Length: 193
Image: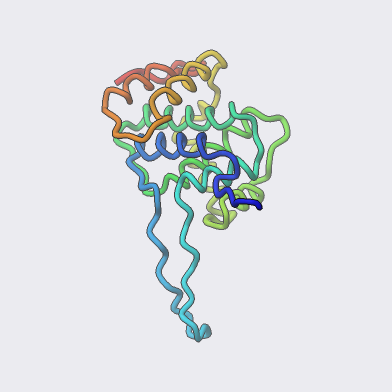
């Protein structure tokens, strides 16, 4: 008797990441279903697949890549840095934000990393290769190419994120400030608001 694990054994980390991204960028956990395709060649009114929830999207990315846990928290730290640089930033797609940050974190932390074509597969077909390339360029630009976080700061950041986001919200505005003071990076570009 086997049971299907839709989180691929990554439920806790995936939910934590989804909570962090959703809270930080005011993103929905679930994206709206795409409209039905109106191609005259298709007699049956086919509906495109419903996008996975953000936590399932993250779980699949963690499962598919099998990267070290520190890469996941580096991705969140990069998103944290993005939010510190652009406090008013909101996201319509936490999926896009997480994938771009996770891809960059992998490229920063790992000697041998995936191609952008592979990252499009990790993105479950939600993003074409050209979109993945664009997401990477834009994220690097928005971060001012500040992609490194020292180990001690990353450890502190990971502890704060786990402490705050391990349980479902609601979360308060003061939590954001607590996290903001936890990540600085080698260029000290982040300051608490």
